[in-house]
Structure formats: C-alpha cells, structure tokens
Image 1 (cartoon, rainbow, N blue to C red):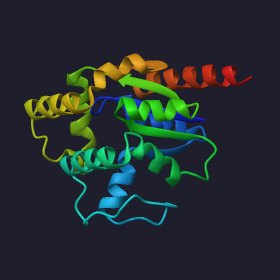
Image 2: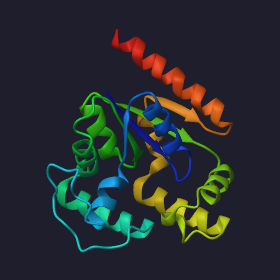
Image 3: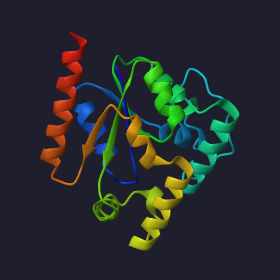
Image 4: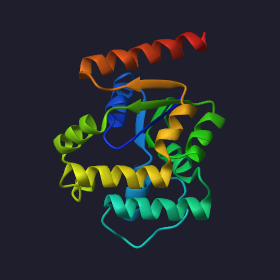
Length: 193
C-alpha cells in the first residue's frame, strides 16, 4: 500500500506520516531524494537520474533542484525515487507530496492521498517549535506567509485538496490527530477485504 501525504508548510504531514510508520509503514519524504542527491548520500538507491553539485539542502535549494528534476525527468521523478529508496517495503507512506503529477503517480500505483490542513497561525506556531534547518530563513509570521504564498504559487497546494481521498483538519491535539489517522487506517483495511 502507498499513502501520499499532502498539505501546506507545517500542517502536520510528517506527524501523520510518523503515525503510519508506527503502524508498520516505511516512511519517506518527497524531499528525501532531493536531500540525498544534494548531499551525495546515494547508497539507498538502485538508480539515480544524475548527481548534482554538492550543496546544503536549504528550502530554496530543494525547491529549485526539485523543479529542475521534474522539468527534466517528469512530474513523478520524486515519487519514483522515494519508492526506489523504500523498494524493500511492503507499505510506504510518502510525506510532502506537492504536485498533481506526484498525486497521479501515487494513484496510478493504487495509492491513496491524504490532505492535511491547519490554519496559518497554527502552522506558524508548529514551524517555530520544530526549528528545522530548512526553515532557518523564516524569522517572522510575515516571512512564513511569504514562504507559504510562494509555495502555493509554485505547487497550488490548496487545489490539491480536491484530489485527496481523505482530509484531516489538524487543529487539535496529537491524540486527536492520531485518532483521525487510525480512522483512515481502519477505512483502508476494510476496503482490502
């Protein structure tokens, strides 16, 4: 089974993916292949399109390199690479799916899409707490809104919600979020029978 997780910056995509991981899924992010290629960490792949110049994987660098790879190798390149990285896994959850092409690549393989959403205020609060290296340039709520807007312009993330099989509104506690994920897992397991 392949699950793709879509949503805006800091909506809770990785947390949702981690809950699937706790249930036995192999977790991979769409940005993992980009980070691996940019840092020349290539041992987990059976193939790679090309090796770029070594670089620090900042948010801007990841976006720029991801755009380049998609233009050169197709919209599904990051999904193909992510699945290759986890090729020995039966069930895979892919965090950070960002485009219609990536969603179509997952659905073409029989996968399911979950869209995670939360208010800008809630997402900014989470972003500050996670303190990730790729978020270093975001110093204020205004910076966050600019980054959010730039990502929306690039990927049209909010429109992707309508391609999702499941929607999670992530405004509450971790326990509430986990319960929503458990409901989805139950629904998916009942479909398999």
